[in-house]
Length: 314
Ligand code: AMP
Ligand code: FES
Ligand code: ZN
Ligand code: ZN
Image (tube, rainbow, N blue to C red; front, top):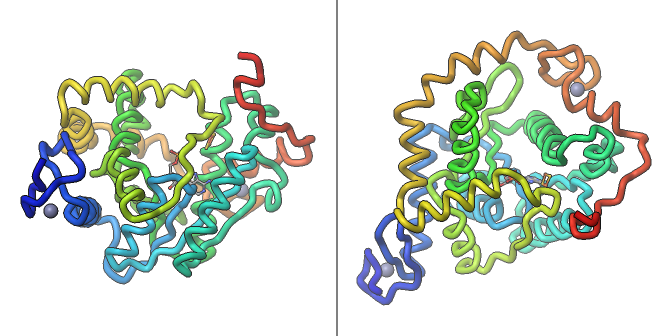
């Protein structure tokens, strides 16, 4: 196996690109793909300050490292969601990564700051944990960005994530979500711009990137997401990709080039007029924003310990 660039011994194969790379050229390829995504989709302008949402997993740690390598002023923001040992491991890993490099990081604990955590919210609302988790993450990312005066929030969603979410949304023709499934969501009415600079890299590549750069990351996936539909869609797409490399890329980027615009009108109509949340001052369609409503229902409830599915006897 020879490196596509230097013809030296290759270390890794990227079947989607029908190419092999040595260590140096693999790392360079990852940087180039991120730089290309940022440029093609106008994600970040030179000199802008970036807040990176870091979970301690391979994608967001790779993203933080890549943005810094590309010369951006990128600081970290990590939320302790209260999902047992998983959350503790995630925040510890993120802290260690930032401390080793001396990069600024804010760690916010959901229970300490807002009086609830994801397992308790899921129990009280009787909804899937990812629902309270998503509402909290979105709100806290936006809020941290406003407080810190950042220009843009970056998350570690990769090609596998985006293709799986797109697949789910297409299966059910979720037109409102399809209109919002973009690598960049522009700034609007008090919400910061949101970008996904890893959309041109798969998760196998972000994992390899971390290993080759000596980045320690949390390997486990969120235990509350077990049985989640997106994980099933990822597996389905992986078997298609296995037979026909490049399908995920063609599916996702084909959607962006040929179809996504068809749905943006639906999304704009759904967004409606924005006011300000009476509790926290965040932009909101209702009088009280979704996060404050969640906090009101959930804070003060006896904490519900997170039990992995196995122990819940399912
Ligand atoms: P997920 O929704 O868990 O697939 O995560 C998608 C992205 O959201 C990650 O790549 C991170 O950028 C961000 N993220 C997830 N969990 C956290 C967390 N606890 N704190 C900060 N950012 C997070
Ligand atoms: Fe949100 Fe698992 S990380 S429910
Ligand atoms: Zn090479
Ligand atoms: Zn609010």
